[in-house]
Amino acid sequence: MASEMGTIVTTHFINGEWTLPGGPTFPVVNPFNGELVAEAAAGGATEAAAAVAAAAASFPAWADMTPGARQRLFLRAADIVERRTEELVHLMAVEGGASRAFSTFQIRLSAAMLRQAASWGYLPAGDVLRSDTPGRIAMVTRKPLGVVAGFTPWNGAFYLAWRTFLLPMAFGNTTVIKPSELAPRSAGLIHAEILEEAGFPAGSFNVVTHAPGEAASIADVFFESPAVRCINFTGSDKTARILGERAGRALKRMVLELGGFNPVIILEDADLAESIRAVTFGAFLHQGQVCMNSRKVYVARSIHDEFVSGLADRVRALKMGDPTDPEVIIGPLIDDRAVDQIEVRVRDALDRGATLVTGGTREGRVYAPTILTHVPPDAICTTGADETFGPLLVVDQFDDPEVALRDAQDTPYGLSASIMTRDRARGLEMAQRFDAGIVHVNAPTMASEAALPVGGVKDSGWGRSGYYAVEDFTELRMTTMSSEPGRYPF
Ligand code: NAD
Image (cartoon, rainbow, N blue to C red; front, side):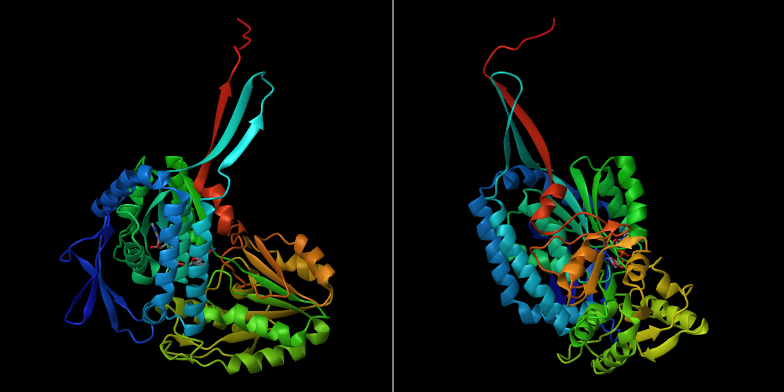
C-alpha cells in the first residue's frame, strides 16, 4: 500500500509482496459523503493467475506446518487485530458505512475466531477404523484441499473476510481472496497487512482486487485453474447462481454463504422489553445490510400494538448520520442502488395499503430505519421471495403460533430465525421444527459468535463457520494397512 499526495493507493498482495503501484486503478468512495477513500489496483486474470500460482507453491509447506507453529501465527494476528482497533473502526466507517457498534462487533468476533482457529491444529486429524479383513487396519485422515479461492462481500467485510481466509487456512489450505470492489481494504487488503505483520509465510494468502464489473476475469482463473480445489463464496444468491453453474461445469467444490429473510416470532408470553431490544438490534444493525438482519416479525395479536409502539420509540431514538461519529448507529447505505431498492419497496408496500409506523425518509444515502405494519401479502418486502437489503422491517400479527411458524418458513431462504417466549421448552420445540441453519430462542437473529456454526439451508447456501468448517475445507483420505496375505477369489 502506498500513499500519494494523501490518497491511499492500494495494490495487490501476491506471494508475500505488495505489487508495484502504477497500473490501472479505480476509486473507492465513502458511501456517506462520496469522498475518495482510496485508489485501488484494478487487477484481472494476470494477477489472479500469479496469486493462484503463489498459493499453490506455498501449499505443501503450509499444510505440513506443525500445529504449534501455525498456532503462534494465528495468536499473533489476533493481537494485531485488537491493537489496530481504532484504525479498523475508521476504515470500516469510511469504506463500508459501518457504525462503531458494528465495527467493534466484527473486531471482537475476528479476534475470537483467530484465537479459536489457533487450537484446531491439535484436534484429532481422523479415526482408526476396524476392518472385516483379518490383519487389516484402516485410517481415515482429514487432508487440506489445496488452494481455496474466496469471494468476499462488502458488508460485514472485515469479519467475513477472516471467515473466508482463516477457516480454510486453519485446516492447512492456502488462499487467494478477491474482495468486493466496494470495500477492497476492509474485505481483504487489511487482512493481508495483518497476516504479513504476523509473519504468515509468503504465498499462503494472496489478495487480488478489481474494478467494478471486472470480477469475471478473476473468477475465470479460479474456475479454470486445477490448483484451485474449492471456491469459498459469501455474497448474494444471485451471484451464487452464476458462479454455482460454473462450479458445476468445472466440478469444483463450492461453499456458499448467502442471504436470508430471518423472521422473528414473538409469542404472547414473551418478555416484551427484551423482544423490542432484540428486534431493534437484529433488524437495524448496520442499517439492515447484514445477511442475518431480521426482515419480518410475527407478533401475537394480543401484544402487537404495545410491541409496535415500544419498537418504534426505540428505533426513532437511533442516531443517524456519519458513522465516523461514535454515537451514530444508522449510517449510509452502501450505494444509490441500495437506497433505490428500499425506496421502491417501501413505496410498493404503501401503494398497496401498508401502514408506515416510522421511517420512510432519507437524507443522502442515510435511510431512516423503517417499520411497516398491515402489509398486504403481495408486497415485495413481505413475501420473503427476495432479500430486502436495508433498514426495512415488516411487522405482522398472528392468532395461532402454528400458523406463524408455517408462514415464517414460507421463504426460499433459511439462514437465521428467532423465537421469543418465556416458555423455553416450547421455544426449543418450535425451533426444532424450523427449517433454517440457525434458530435462536430468546436472542436476535444476529446473535453471532465465532465458535458457533453460522450457515444456511435452502437458498441461503451451505457451509458452516467455526470448527464445523472442517467438513467444507478438508477431504477424507482412507488408508489401509494389511499385515496378513489377502484371500483372493482368483
Ligand atoms: P454480491 O453477490 O454482489 O458480491 C459478492 C462477491 O461476489 C463480491 O466479491 C463481488 O465482487 C463478487 N461478484 C459479484 N458478481 C460477480 C460475477 N458476476 N462474477 C464474479 N464475481 C462476482 O454480494 P454483496 O452485495 O457484496 O453482499 C451482500 C450479499 O451477501 C447479501 O445478499 C447478503 O445477505 C450476502 N451475505 C451473506 C452472508 C452469510 O454469511 N450468509 C454474509 C454476508 C453477506
